[in-house]
Length: 100
Image (cartoon, rainbow, N blue to C red; front, side):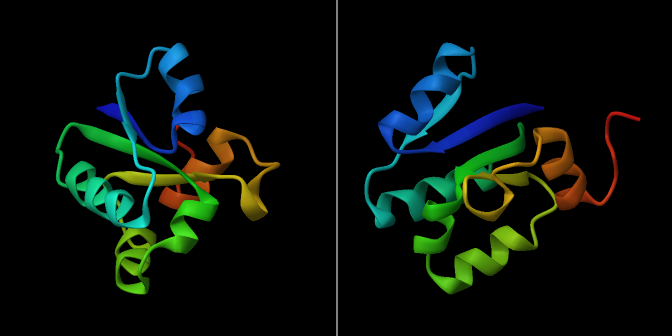
């Protein structure tokens, strides 16, 4: 399973430096929605990382699909959950602590 990151260039650069290969630049809401659909259809992606603000800019229909997605697990950064660790965010998304 791979991690994918979608966002503006400033958001994804840190992930690229960390070695994440599946990073996608999406500067407009239309491009963002299109890229999210593409990545969600990729069976190799296990975790999809998005900015919380980007998630809020999507059409409500796509937000519901993302919120109910089990695979890939969607992790949002920023917003209300800014203080939570990645482990805690995945636990909230999946309902199980994957590190145990």
